[in-house]
Length: 261
Length: 261
Image (cartoon, rainbow over all chains, first blue to last red; front, side):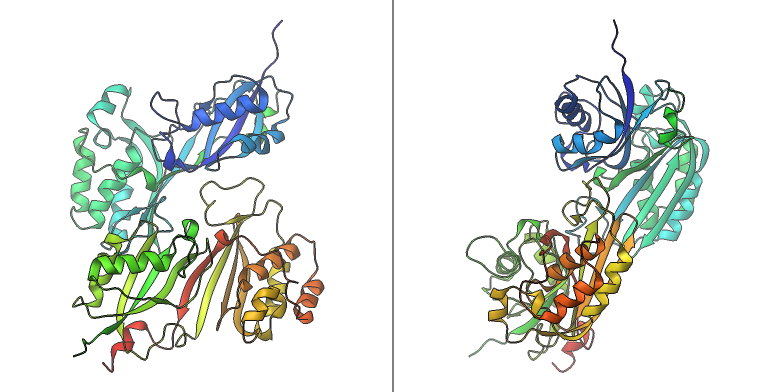
């Protein structure tokens, strides 16, 4: 006799500072570890969770989406507070939904949104030190935004990955829907929405855009990097701490995917 | 022969999480300690610094203003990066100016601005956990803002201090210029500008305003607290971590106070 299991989806927020990224690893604590441990404490089930977006070491999330199967009698609304009780303070479950088993947090997603934050004044910011890269010289945000528009569209972004990453991905073509660089006081924010991302794509893109913003490189140079389709050209890889996974988008609100159950 | 000393003023930002407040204490590290240690390392002078606003244990600052006398040959513009080199990552010097010896960071100030941040949704925020109080139930921000207007003016705020604080201040009358409660997404922000503040005034005010926002108390009850002028009535004292000293205002820009030197 098989026990019926439900597919549960969670929206998770975390401060990635003290973690080796989202996905399970041998050499350090990950968000996945902590979530699976908390699920075990709450439900006594050993479950494997799947995340919509693999965030790297030190990268944060406001809206990571994860799923797992559970035979627990808990209703979805009981998961957030139940898991938060066992989770460390730097991870929290914002919402939970029951979905069809066919719903796939990765494949059902239509786009992901990332934000990269830069603290842009001569002196560092103690209050934002965990969440922003510090760039001392004033960035030309208009130039950066103009260059950012060049990576919007369905494009071969081979120059925005490393040689190593190039060898593990099937294709370096990605569909970027929107990219924007804007200033809010002493903060410069780079937001980008794409169907999916290549490894380190956002951090290599903003690393290059910062060079444009500092006048070390013109928009034409940025265009050349894109056109040469050569791994390693877009650099440096900006520090992880400035990056946050803001949202994963699906065709319907997550609460609608239980309809056919 | 006396060595000529210059009066230097610094604008300081800090994350107060790991400090026992601004002012020197026997039982733990303070912002003043760290600044004096860094000044000694930079200038080899043992100096005593004075702060414009005493922030409590765990309270943050974006614009604390401090002053000290120095015989150093450094020009003011050399202090921020010089001190940041020796300061821990949770304290930074944003700017430095030379001023007349008559300029007094406390007495020359015309007003101080504080901000209190509340994270207002059922689940906690890992990303803002050091900088916001968490209130799970939805706050009625309009009611809170209406009540906040009652503490604007030149008023006897005796109900907003403790019995102990009452006994150490000369008067409980304070001049509050502006108070505002507003929502920005899942965050509720209370900003208040006054000539000066009583001990714990901001945290007791927002503690009471939260009770109004939760419907545990009406605006009339809030008014009664104010009118009864009895220490301890306005409570609870909201947690320190939500509070930040935003700015200290002077009649002229700080850069103008060296004119007569």
